[in-house]
Image 1: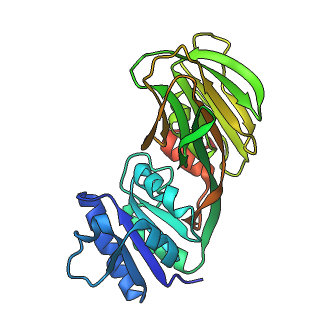
Image 2: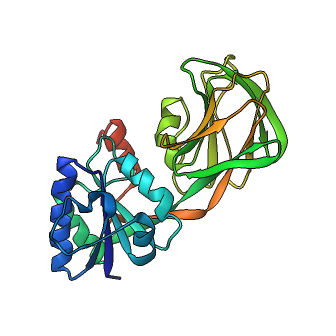
Amino acid sequence: MPYQTVGLLGKPAHTGTHDSLKLLADYLTRRGCQILVEENIASEMPGNGFTACDLVTIGKQADLAVVIGGDGSMLGAARVLARFDIQVVGVNRGNLGFLTDINPDDIEEQMDLLFAGESVVEQRFLLEVEVYRHEKLKSNNSAVNEVVLHHGKVAHMMEFEIYIDDHFVFSQRSDGLIVATPTGTTAYSLSGGGPIIMPRLDALCLVPMFPHTLSSRPIVVDATSTVSMRVSKVNSDSLQVSCDSHIVLPVLPGDEIKIKKSADKLTLVHPKGYNYFTVLRNKLGWGSKLY
């Protein structure tokens, strides 16, 4: 189904992003689309008559959102856009670009495929994280890639306990713990030694960060589980929970962090020919076929 209203998002004051924005705006204008431009980049497109608006408005009104930048730009947009019935595609102006798979040199050809319905559509689930203090909710947020419990100081250990659906799993002394979605297993979790999980699997990966025992290993659990991290009262007061490395929630000794799958889902659309294993080979430098 052709897209009638398209939102444009990107990294401000970035030459590559600006070039792709202009190209996309011209392309969408020729297609007769209504164009919504995110507020923080609207100033880079003066006098064009496009509607400047916030992410929530784009989520409510647009059929498609095009995020121009790296995975960080996509993650920031995704946490908001996942609440709405909108498809999202990324133009890679960053480094790895696991989530932004349109090449800037092929924008028009790739967009032609999307408008022709020659695309691959998939949904990625998010995580909801809540911080409780004395059994009262103190803060909460969401994450596309991962939720990380970590110390506010570099190379500082902490003590905490892990529960899955209120069943005790283990206690640990380490630098923290990464709880990653399948989407996030190619991000921070991968750097920490965690496995790669295919996006369509309904699973979570728990990856200890520099644990003080050789027997601590990543564990994969059902994504319908609720993961609880109970922070020991013997810790110092400089603890944090981060969401996608963008949002930080303060944590005090004795707090409990609860993580579960969000009801919101990010709807990603890829041009025809998209294959997850091709992405892995290209981004991670895996070997090609021998024959």
